[in-house]
Image 1 (cartoon, chains in turn red, brown, green):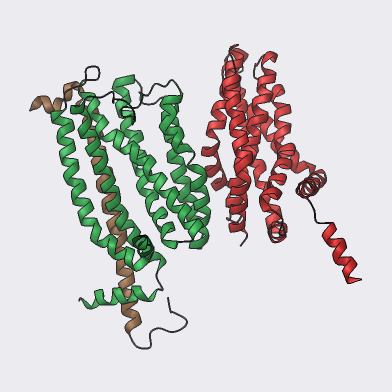
Image 2 (cartoon, chains in turn yellow, red, orange; image 1 turned 90 degrees about the horizontal axis):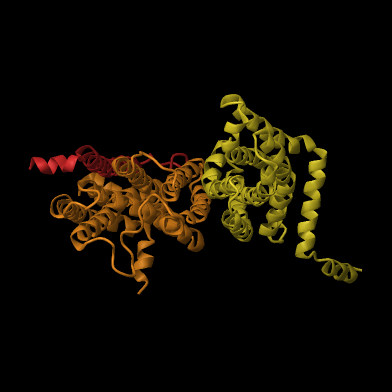
Length: 237
Length: 62
Length: 249
């Protein structure tokens, strides 16, 4: 009896993809139950972009000049807001502790969590951005570059933000500290991304900044999970 | 000599830079020393207190 | 051969060494600064384009170099602390941060003042200036993260991760003038090939850079000693040293 139990358990040792898939499924299920938490950063994104025509000028010709920057900054701030809910609930109820103790690779688990978080927080921004950009006077021809650069960029923001979130998750009222730590790291992403859209609006070649963004994303994908895992282990001890 | 201070018309820029540098360098030096002195003072006091018989208990052993 | 390294990792030894070294470091720094300042302000001829304003280079470039070097020292020390679990390495990292931050402020300020007559503007958002500003934010973020933890050990390790992640910015600052066509001038000194600056103008610059490094080491001595005192409060070696001090021997 004991033998067959042991044999059965060994045969069911989960593979890496399985672990990632289980965590992703869990995150999606939780998101569906609290979809209002998912929607809030998106609404914030729209509201922030609305502030600029009110503050600066309702003239579309003037807004068009600053539209790439405004959309990008609003996306950065919205992603910062969504980072609050990335790790904190799971640290508070001990889930992350269980993950750390489980013997499975923590970097992979946190990466899976972050990728799913991007699907719920970053991807909606990418989809919403052309709408918001048009409201600020961007021509439709720019939409592909806008969406593309934001897709790459929000991926970087989620990963870099994940590092900051893991570092500050145990700090009381750490949201401002999170912003202070993460925004300087994200500035290159902002520079490349906004520049790509700006170039597209002037009809120039966008390959340069987009390639740089892709490179940054690859670097983050490769290294951020390990930084997140190290930071998380410190935060939960 | 006056030419030296005049710095070819750029006196304001050049001397404010050098002045700023002096202030920052001296300031760092001074504040680092001040911090060290205050830490040394506290450590010395703690050592003095602990040499008094009976002053160190399991409660205040710091 | 590595004995000196292991000895340095011991707080009492490092404490004594720092105390002994500081006067040497400080006085040689001061001497070199005087020599370099004389060379830069008096001996070096005025620049063809910038006239006498170029003399700001003798404080701006050393400050900027130090702002990056100190961060690398900080990140390496933090890395050593995390990998080999040497507490003193974390103390070094903590001690470096305020000094490096001030060098960055100095680099930005002197650069801005220099920019006004040369480029006609106090500030430009070009890659080098922007990445140097990011460098300042990285220092501030490091110090902010440190102070948000009550426990020194957790503060050490969390800020070490941040420092290592942030070290990516250092090559960006350094090579920004090479990678992008920038308003900021290109590198004046390069390892390969002849420098684009005459030797009369070059030697005060190199001397001043060395002077700044010695100065940094001198200030670091004081700050490391403070860190050791703060961290080793309960250590018996400390009360021994301090009570002999108190008695006045």
